Each structure stands twice: as structure tokens, then as C-alpha cells.
Amino acid sequence: QVQLVESGGGLVQPGGSLTLSCAASGIIFSRYVMGWYRQAPGKQRDLVATITSGRRTNYADSVKGRFTISRDNAKNTVYLQMNSLKPEDTAVYYCNADGSLVLRGNYWGQGTQVTVSS
Image (cartoon, rainbow, N blue to C red; front, side, top):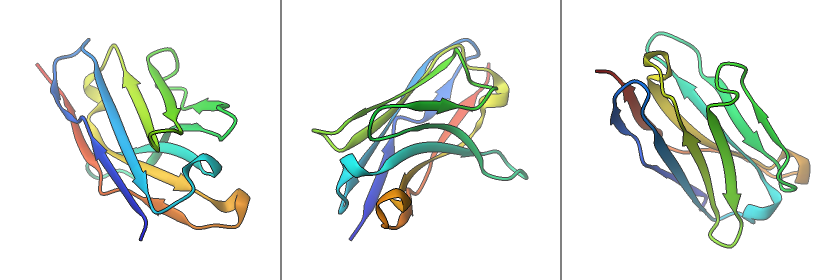
């Protein structure tokens, strides 16, 4: 059974920082492209960042220079370091495991709320 469990969300003031974690089980983690997506109320779910097995990264323009995605294959965990947070970063953040490159499935976590407000 595949599980992606996010943690680290919460309430932070504008300009602050948070680090999200996503612990994966039930997959060969090192083979998956891992990603973070977010969904604000009334909006579609959008890409935030992805990281390949070779640690190549991709970011949405809105978070470039502020967010950093990383992975620890020994811990089956992907991280999202978020700095200089803005109110428009408020959303539910979802972890994604994409196994399409190795003919495996695509999986989502349950999401963690990030609220940026003073």
C-alpha cells in the first residue's frame, strides 16, 4: 500500500519560513519523480516544484528563488523549504509521487495546510 504523509504546514507571518516534509512508503522512492503541488480555495491544483531521481529540479515561476525542493532517498522523504512567504502562498500543499517514467503509478498525499497571514 502506497502512502505519502505530509507534515510541517501551519500558520506563518508574511516573510516567514516553513519546511514541508513528505514521507513515502510502499514505493521504490528513488525511482520516482517527487513533487509538491498546491491548491488555494476555489482554484485548481498547481505545480509548485518537482525533483527527479537525478535531483534535477523544476519550479513554478511564482516560487523561484524562494522555495527549494530536495529529497533524501535514504529516508524516503521529499522536502519543500519555503522562504519569504507571501499571503498568496496560502493553500493546501500536496505531495506527489510520479512513477510514469518507470511504468508505475501516480500517487498523492492527503495535503497539509499552509496559511500566510499577519
